[in-house]
Length: 198
Image (cartoon, rainbow, N blue to C red):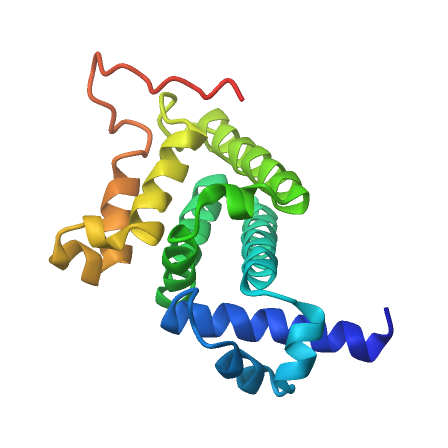
């Protein structure tokens, strides 16, 4: 692929992510082309239908999540890295895209080999970060990476299920819940969450 074609492709996917975050996955293709600064014909040459574009946006989303986790994990303080990443993931624009993508049947996005590969690597990296925080004594030993993923899923993908005061200030409540995951905060006798065997 020529450099200019690659740039156009990147611009289209980034523009689609922005517009879908604002207007949902059914946002007009014309609006996406306009945001990307390309003609509608160029958009359809790259993505013959909406499904193909949504899959590309899903791949883009999981890549940005993985890259953000890598940046946060580069620091020496694992607990600070977890808080930094969770806060980043819950920022309004990013969470809005997660909410939009949650409207799409999971098999439509998760069926992409690239998405599955990148998500598996992201989960593995997140799990390693959790284990680092537990090993250095800053995080409760009974917390799993699945606990954090479920927490993010509710706050970023399904804000409509939250009470309005919580949905309007997600970062505050995420931090309150993260505080409960710090070492020493465990309730004696509380059963740990089972780890997902996959």
